[in-house]
Image 1: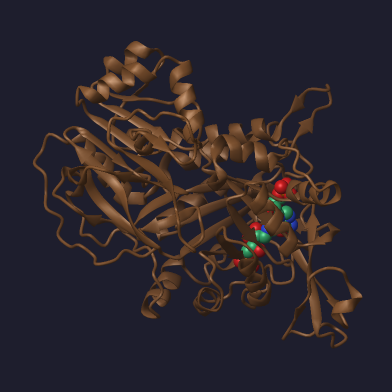
Image 2: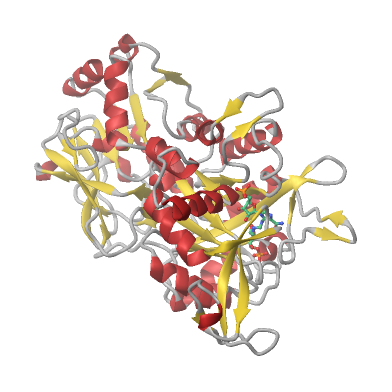
Length: 527
Ligand code: 1PR
């Protein structure tokens, strides 16, 4: 029996699912005594350092947890569950951590995109049971803006490179804690969890230690989901956002089955977009929550969900905040939420008034769940002009001239699945969203969606250069070469495709093999 310390933020369901898939029963800590009576305690953490420590105090968990750790009893901390073991964090000045180990938590000081999101390697620093069965070439899933700086060198279990070398896991006695998320690291992560459960067995020396680890470029499979004309929830796919063929919604499969297929085929991440979420209220749209619940039972890579994340008042006058909607998604198994239409309206308001309200979906969700949990999905369309003076929006000089030979264009944001164009451009939108607390941009292109012509490199370059959070390039992928092009011509961290995978024209494995041959860092597929 394992005991899980859930302090109420983030996606603990995936940790439970991962442990259950290993045949373990999980008990939740409900009262302070449950901590001291645990045989093995698991403490996953996402979100914010101060909200975690404050919640531990409020629930009277702080002291029992400290005692459990001081008694050197079996413990696995994950992400913030690692950081909380140190004295303090730059994320929350004045807030005291558990102080089990000397040292502090520091914000990444690098010119690379922060958060550090994605699959990176580990360099073992000492033998450990955790490394049993690993070859050293594995990549694990990270998502964080802060990392630990321990004072005691002997607790360092492994390190990882991101701009510089940082400590990515520690081990001392029976206490192990990782910055990466084993529960989101596919089969490799499950192996690590299994190793923790067998901690009493002998430690092993890692076979291979890379000189430097590299963050992999992520390949994301996207499932646009909606109810079809028969009332079934299906994966569909549009051509430039038109999902109907001969008047009927295209049906490309069932969401849970397809997600599972992409997981086994090597997708580094899976995104569900509830494409009619702008008009249907997602908490009434229970099938979508069920899709997440079922998917997260056996898909152990990050899951993002988008569609309908905004404040909402129902017919009876009951108000639901965007934070409540997002929380329900996180509880159902999502790791990140993606905000589309609402982000455009928030940024318009911000530009009109010149100030942030602190109450928007982006700000409230980011504050509770952390920036890394908030993705902004942008649906831009090219608007051509003869000359830059013809518009007040930032323009680019384009190599793809407009219908009348125009040499300039700007990228107009749309809402409601591309149905309504707004007076704001994608570059400004991305910049303001970053300022408000978004952690990642999912950059679509209505012009390229479903065309197989390749990504809109000019759009992606323009947005990527304007911001410092990671960007997922989307729309238009038709071949492995297109992925290579977007990774080499722009600095994007991830590339997403839908149609080619759904129609089985190109597999995720083919894309990864091609990229690997060309020298692009990817996450190897371990089955
Ligand atoms: O506005 O917060 O409710 O979110 C709605 C979400 O649904 C947004 O993220 C929006 O992008 C998405 N969406 C709405 N309508 C459509 C549609 O297609 N009619 N999906 C839609 C389109 C594009 C990607 C697509 C890529 C790759 N989003 O999802 O998967 O373009 O396709 P490809 O590889 O086949 O070219 P809100």
